[in-house]
Length: 145
Image (cartoon, rainbow, N blue to C red):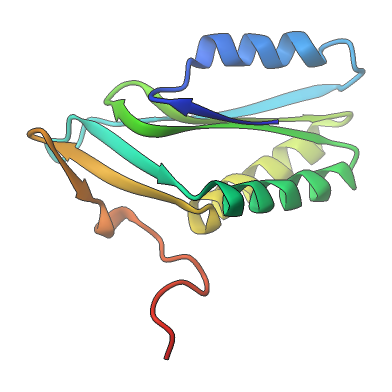
């Protein structure tokens, strides 16, 4: 399931929920990743815009890919403002075998950073500034030639 939070992801509640829902479904592994907003460059936090139809399609393709391995993907991301030292992203992969979950988690997070349709802004001195230097252009995006 894909969850979108208005503001920070409540990591403790979310991981407890995911574990509680899946612990009796005979998965041998639950591997998680949590992204936390770091205090750097004088920012007060980050802010995110999401293009939901594309995110749902991208996420669905990953769920299908993992299902072929007998694994399940859960993901949550923030929309709007997220202060430093709070989380904007969490995901978990459930798999019968740990190696599948560990391998797929790395591939998923790397693809997320490169291709998920989520735009990041710095929050600094009450302003929202596009974080161009820390953003990755999406394949196929931009002006048409």
